[in-house]
Image (cartoon, rainbow, N blue to C red; front, side, top):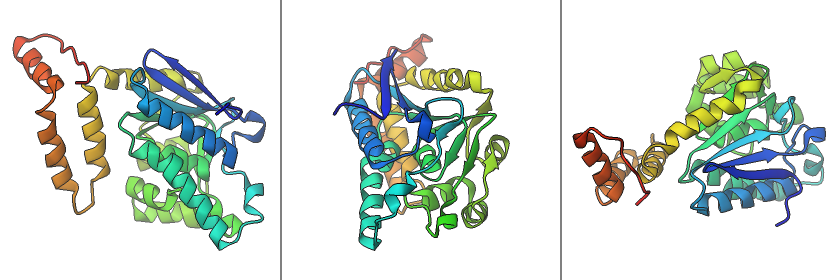
Amino acid sequence: MPLKNILVEIRSRICYITINRESKLNALNAATLAELGEALTQSFANADVGGIIITGSGPKAFVAGADIAEFAPLNAEGGRQMAQVAQHQVFNVIEQGSKPVIAAINGFALGGGLELALACHIRVASTNAKMGLPEVTLGLIPGYGGTQRLTQLIGRGRALEMILTADMITATQALDFGLVNHVTEQELLLNKAEEILEKILSRAPLAVAAAIKAVNAAGTPDGFETEIDQFADCFNTADTREGISAFIDKRKPDFKGE
């Protein structure tokens, strides 16, 4: 698929995906979501990629929401299909992916943009970032996982306040709420995301994938069993044997992802 709305670059095992619709504040239309889903699927399948950073083009916005013009002709079935396709092809792909995905939130992350960030495993925001879910001002609710993932991150009360008032919060508030992991100056945003991801990439890749799967199961009836299963499966990997051996030998491990 030729890419018109996103930029994809791989450097030093990091895949950089940039939503590239700066004149539209990087709004997520159907075409952009389709490109994003394809790029994510390819990145997770690419052995040369260890992790992904998602950001927005320009200084004003990460993603300032969905393309509202595409909502106008929809009925209930159209809305259902739009939400299901986006969830299955983009948002769930990120959350359930076997490689770490970091959102580098530069500027506005509203509606579908915040939902995109929420699906990522780790979030870093610039000091000028503003986050919110304004869907109720359109007579809608978040449909790309916002009601679920925001509640899991910051708790029911704060999630309900953000969703029901449609108010934006600052990067500092988002940090206080636990919505983002770090806040940094905008010019240092990608550096911070890279710093975190490079540290993760120095760890055992199969263990990282197992940890993501186990954490994703937290709070479900199978959460503890998933952790036990993933813990046990690690013992079948060469990386676990290498990690234990390196610890005993007091040397740096050489993980192969095997």
